[in-house]
Image 1 (cartoon, rainbow, N blue to C red):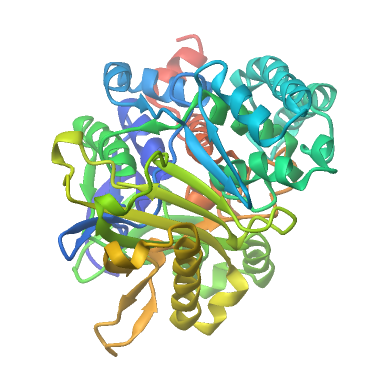
Image 2: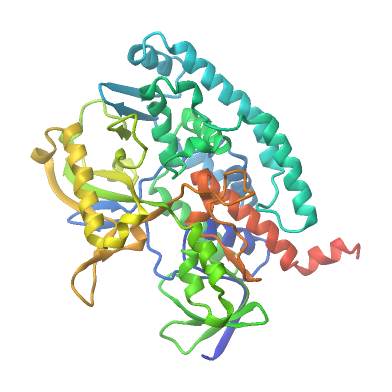
Length: 504
């Protein structure tokens, strides 16, 4: 083992959003936090004079989602949030064969769009949207008192059972879009954007989160300058501002594990180990598990992780082009559906975003722009390596050419965010930083919300990679971070909390 040089309450390995939110909450409440970037990279990168992204910035719920509001309140970030997010208008376009619908949070516009594209069906849509709004009013009080899921221990199980009964009474089971079964185009108009926001190709199978995201969508998507990167930087600044340490260029190497716990972590390339009371996986949990000593990782534990591994990955092809090539009247974000009767995966459901890096308006090039194109590739195709990802990228561009016939006339360069050139072999290899996990199978006893649990089979290891957010999408990052923070307060109570609980 390397020399033990420092010790922390919490060591976070990776920089996925849920882990950074948790780290900020922990540091704000007196825990010593260390973040090792472990290869995590910013969402934006530059190439050929363009700012490209590894994932589109699809941000929502800042004002209406309890989980998001509470995190910003607890971290004293409300002033920043009053100034940073600005709603897009229109919210987005949904483009179907022979139909194009502009979604807007301005009252009356969406009704006009539906009446034009779906004549005589405005009543069906109005009833559906009204049902979702009423459902959210019943769900919001439950979200404020939500238990840790899945439950562990008798008290958590009783709370979980109580919430389950309340949700069962409020949320109709089954297909959330059953009312649209006879109209595939109308169904796809709602299914496409919600499936992408929830990072779940069949999101309608989970009516609780489908309803919440539908309401978020109707209230609008937000422009936050520099998008996901600026949000992560907010949480990093709170960690550093509360005596935490952030070392983004460092990697974890191996773990000292005894009596069911991780005790210290070797830092790669240094004769240094750092002690910890809690290890947080802020990246793929399977990668962290492979770094544990073989004697503490049982086959059934790895099999369970594999069973709930992502079924798809959202990958993005970036296009650098002349700004005049963007169609007039096109929304900043477009959901493009090729066949409404087919699954919302692969190239059948693509997300297009103009200027996806969300740079400030005064920094945008008036002559050139970036168009990101994102689709969910099945994980099974990745067995073929980078070649399958590159073929998928070309297929996505072909679909964009059909939507924008003059694309090639304005195209300057392209970049596939999910591949990179290996320094060792000089060949193209998959790049994990550009592969965003999406799941179709949710973990048991999580109300169809969580893809992977925060708790792991190891006593002091938490899982807060992107995959834990499940069908809650962007909101889910805040929800699972809050769950983890509730757990650490019980696992590692601070002295003042302990004294107060004992009445001292």
